Image (cartoon, rainbow, N blue to C red):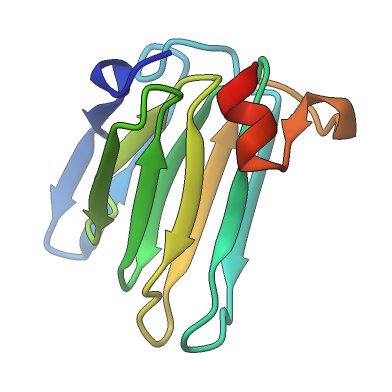
Length: 132
């Protein structure tokens, strides 16, 4: 996969005087939702990720605060995207290396995934990823 397949997706936002509501349904993302999890209380200076997935696709959303997503492909191309809006999601296809860093205080990263957890789907060594 190349970085050209990474997309920012607009998540529908319903605005009301009582606050905003956003909804993620299968017509918003190009895969069936099989797993949802979130990252929070990430200590300052820490990072998450550091892997690629063989099959799994993900949508990452900054529900609160902000963080950077560093994306790399096997060709050596690199792109950094800052997520900081709860109605914008970053769609990451399979076979893209990802690292999450620069978490702001109170940041929450919601992850919507196309597959349930499978340890064999992970590539955790960047050199192995580049060679695959």
